[in-house]
Length: 431
Image 1 (cartoon, rainbow, N blue to C red):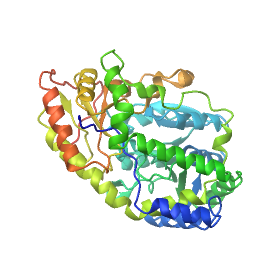
Image 2: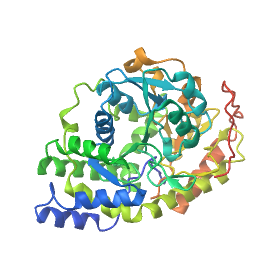
Image 3: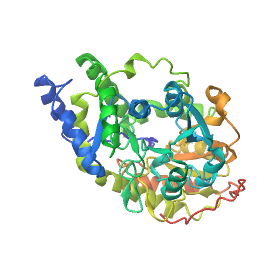
């Protein structure tokens, strides 16, 4: 039987299920002491004073924006390559999204693009640490200080990543994290806001804790849904569920069926009622378990990335991820450029390796943001990037299989030529 490898793996720590059962038996599935314990340990892990839980990472961001109490129509700068929900949340909060281009090699916001985007109405810069790769924070912070702007870090992909020895999320005025099923810290949904600003933290907490508690049924439904997702992308689950559909689709010109699974791009005003909930004690119990071993899990993903880069570096049709030398990425995704992404991904799935085309959104191409966009050619050039499996649950044999397959199926692909506009330079290829 063909050995298949899904593009994603959901992290779960042994003993979590038993801990959850005890939590519900004590009647603490909704409210309980684990919420505050998780907040305190999350803050301590990042070396900041405050951490506040939320129902979603996007809601943690929303509370930060509302707590800042900015004039309506204030401008907020995002990289053009990011998850569409985050700039849409800013729009719902009464702000005007402005998009700037990325560095074509790191996929993160290009600090050189910031000055031209700043106007008298600009109030915030949101560096997105995309794919677990830290942004180049020093020049971003310098520009923000020069213009008196807030910096809010999007750390949805980057828990545990470091920039010049400090963790992402600790550089700006505030930061937010996502605990969705596939994220580095998985509590089957939820998010966190962190900050060192006492007054800002107080306002964020007031907003978050003003939301209603979820019902026990809602929490159980959320957890069961997460467990099912995890089962579908497990080695056996993927082989007998999603893989056959992906395999067949590869012969009929369908690049990626998951476009029909992901959340529909749409206006979020008013915010869906499911967003307006508090974070549950049961989820915090999971978060505490994962936080204990987060660095060990990240280290596995980092080792997988190192081995992938070593095995791919001589293939002329592929460019592995480029990293800044003073960063330690955590590789939520391992993003490559290749001369023929469609052919490579189709060949790979037929050999049992699931790759994803374009994980996030090129916001300047979305109708939702048409009134706010201007050309961002580097971001738009990423439409054909591929994300390889790199998650911590992979085994050494999985990495060897990924490399064997890619080395074989890329032999006849043309060499990759990077010809993006602008003057951004590629950093060292070394991880």
